[in-house]
Length: 506
Ligand code: BES
Ligand code: MN
Ligand code: ZN
Image (cartoon, rainbow, N blue to C red; front, side, top):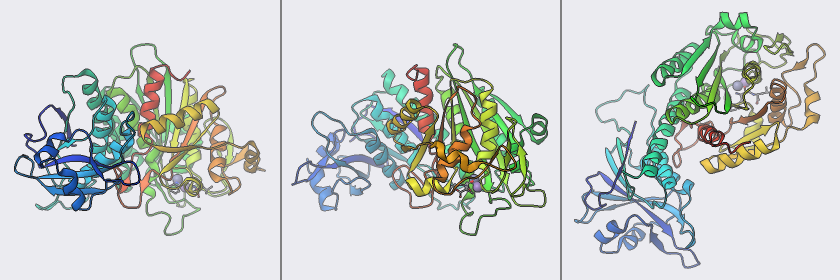
């Protein structure tokens, strides 16, 4: 992992392979390029002409833009990398956290292959350090475990130093700690998502969680297929029964010594979703190793909360199974008896996520937590509705749904509140069982949410995040988001844990 440090050293004298500065577009019709605060010493080394030089090289200050300029003799770093910050904020406003996070991510990606970079970006408050740190560490991420790394292979930035921050300042130090805990756990979630499904079986995933539990002093309990059978987890078993790799239900618990609030997080962990007997057509299953992104996010959030010692109890439930077709697989038409006791007619074995989540939600409900949030790559319908950068939020409590939407926004994650229209529930009525695992196609993401709602314990505040769109980036990398697993929702979950600890959420 990339190291993150703070330094009071001058931008001119610090030894680094590159110096990162921010540039922005002046407000108003004339525009013009402006060097952002934090890079005064760099500008001075350019004789006050840094903006002019960069403008000649094509810089306009747009977000996403990166421009390189060779350093003059007064700077130790051989070159300057200017990242666009968009339009200069109004006099009484500062650059937004997400602007800084994205710019830092673009810088880290542009500097891939170098060892050490110094960032001279605008820092007004500790939150800016957090955003820049997060963006740099997330942007430096690369998944190379399965590639032959020859001697010429480029590695991610080894060290990022933030200038203009105070290493001895308590708030600044805490900001670094938080960005490290968050980004490292998010990058670990990305690794899990990117690991091919022949290696990341439910059993292997459970072993990773157990090892992390040991490392951080967290209690981890794993229910294997025998224990699941004994416990009557018909949903998880029904999904996993077609695979050679048996399912697991993993519980990871972080408890704070103080008698704090209890947040339960439930993650969909389908290590591979072939669709089962209702097999997905070619073109729809190449990326389905990403179907455990919800479980990876929950795992990351619990560990990050523990590393930061948050004053809250967080329980993570990872419902792990592989959805495969075989002679032993669940058939469309089979009826499963779920952990809650309800029976479900499986009309489509590709609607498997709701089956494993139903059991985990009911299990989580037994502990009567103050709130439950589940995270899942649940429906293609949500991708159609919101695209591939935005997750949908459904809940049995309007205030809770609104709170999560706001928390996501504050964390730099795009989300949108979605309804759970009661009229759609009856489309899951089954002539044979208590309900079917499928209803109407239109509004399929909401139908799935309504299914989950049936398995949340009476009186428990619950929200469901459908991250099918943003969990896995099939397009080009952008900002701090790489190709492949993104770590979607981890930032929202961690902030939710922090807000729960602070008692902000009722
Ligand atoms: N894992 C998929 C949903 C998905 C789609 C995730 C695209 C990521 C990207 C889920 O298990 C699924 O197959 N859902 C079906 C449900 C349908 C059969 C009711 C879907 O959305 O088509
Ligand atoms: Mn499926
Ligand atoms: Zn799935």
